[in-house]
Image (cartoon, rainbow, N blue to C red; front, side, top):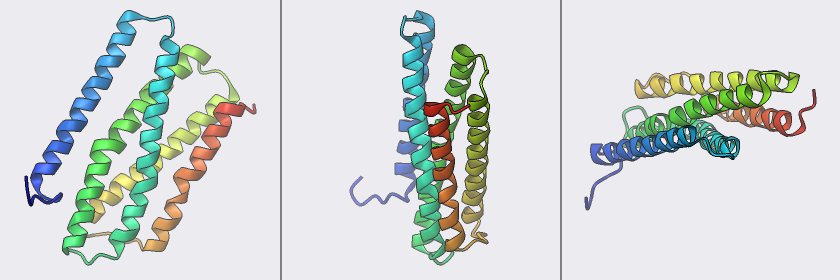
Length: 180
């Protein structure tokens, strides 16, 4: 391992393995909770949902920062290849699993607690859908950067960095304040 670089295949395989173990442990915990039906199941699901959302948001806020710096790297350079690896791992290891878990647990809570009723809930789901579209846009950008076909400048990515933040603010206000 001495002298091994993060862009080598070994660290990537280990990162994927750790992510797979984490997702499997998360699934085992959820299965155990649903099988055991503890009195505080709602609180467990809510806590796991919040953890997944925090992970998803962290990735959504970090990815455009990587894109900003990646736009300055010459295609094919060592720096560009490093950014490609970072973007790919962030997407596959954190962003995608966190998004899926956020949606599944969020829909479970929306159904089991609120019966999908409430204007604030519908607005929140719309905002989460828009956040998912941002996620999809970032995923496509990762693929474009992988092919050295990014067509956007750093200014665009700085502006895109604001989209998840604005949606997060709206979502938190809708969930906590429930204004309608």
